[in-house]
Image 1 (cartoon, rainbow, N blue to C red):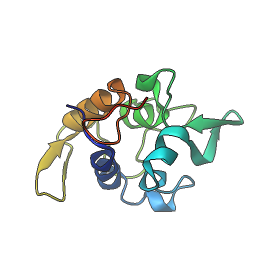
Image 2: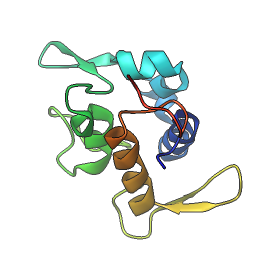
Image 3: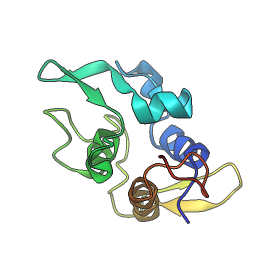
Image 4: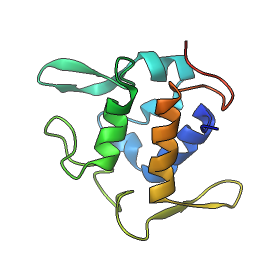
Length: 127
């Protein structure tokens, strides 16, 4: 079963605790609808807005690519800009329930969430 949007938000807040200082801010802390249908605020790709979730190809969503790819996305470096990357060996975060989640598991969970068409709750699917 895929993670919920709330769990995704917790992951992103732990991965990018200083993102509030970035041009895009902590855009994932808005509403679910804004996340799945909105654009990354404050940044563009060659003058075009960047959809947060690519509903034509969920797995090609910019927020996943920039976390996962050492090449970053559209001439922007892999995120977070400062600090450890999710892809680094030994990376993990501690969640509010006390559980420890590795970077590998985080990426697996995000892939699964996107493959399920980005559900708000773990039992839903985006229609």
